[in-house]
Length: 240
Image (cartoon, rainbow, N blue to C red; front, side):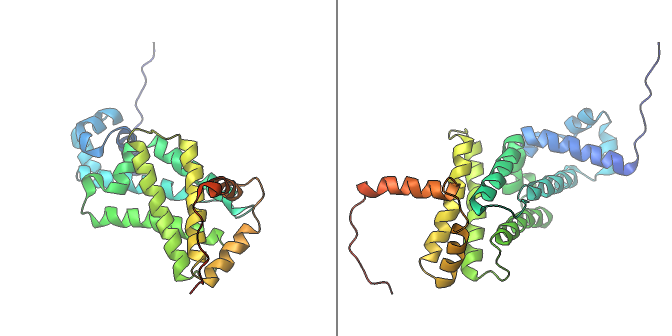
């Protein structure tokens, strides 16, 4: 009969293990509900040893938050090939994969959790949003995006975040439906902005020219067309 010998971890390896354990616990429960004792037990070490690697729960939480933020930011990475609508739908699929897998952790990331008021945590959250916006702008192929386009993209990223947080509270709407709806929301936001500005109109028309008849944007047009007969007639007005 042999006895297993526990391998001694290096400092960085142990830190990464604790971050992983904490992130896993935070993914299933609010960080406020997870104690250092639970983290230590899950890692198979003593409570004092946790404090040897992290000064306190706040520092461990922020380290886990950093890993979650880095992973979430990668969900917006997408090859710039093919129609924009299909690309955005794949991005939303990966985004909701993360939300689905790390529900309480995602909520804590976006709402601040026990790190409310922490400049470090706030900077990480802002970093995720900025990375998401930069990726979407890159997909539109605009080197110097106008202010209206930046406004649309930032508004849409905020909408995706809010939608995910609301969805987590009961998951009453099918996830796939929300993913498609958010892509439609992006099309709607850009279309409204295009109605007010020629530069935006040019950006939108270039993107639509590459959309297939069976893509998400075309699906939105079909859905809106079905509403048209029931809508009251609007008198023709001269545009400003």
